[in-house]
Image (cartoon, rainbow, N blue to C red; front, side, top):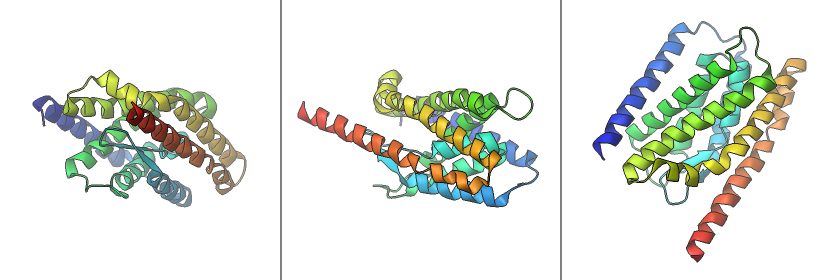
Length: 227
């Protein structure tokens, strides 16, 4: 592995673990354990709906919807732990090769950094966030940081341009992060006005996002093979 890649990976892992540790130190209590466990469980299920990126050793999934729900309705520590568990599931679930420990740590750290930044974006204004207005910019920040950090490490390892990797792997998914933000907003609003468990009925919409991921990647792969 190139020295630049090792340095970047080490720095990212250190930053991510420091942010995770800090959030857990300041964490006091979980006011609604059932809601947290339900979101964490569904995030893990969503992590199994993953699509392998063409030509690269990486996958994407739709678990970001639950991370956005956590940003809107959970504490930072709850949101981060939910995301970490979901990321670990995504790394190991039906993986073609057993992921290396450093790969898992990097993915977890990138998730922690991007989620922390998105959480801060959504909660910049004191008081309860306006869900609709808060989640759109939060989803954008999460998308840019998470996909950018992953694209950079892939570019360093494969000796490619980072923008080329980012365009190929992630740029096409941005509209669906915004769709995910809309779903998360609706779930959060429904949870305010009724039993929050009923709002989870909206989440099968995530499968449509997963279906699009699969369809797009399959069509792109077939097109490349045709040429």
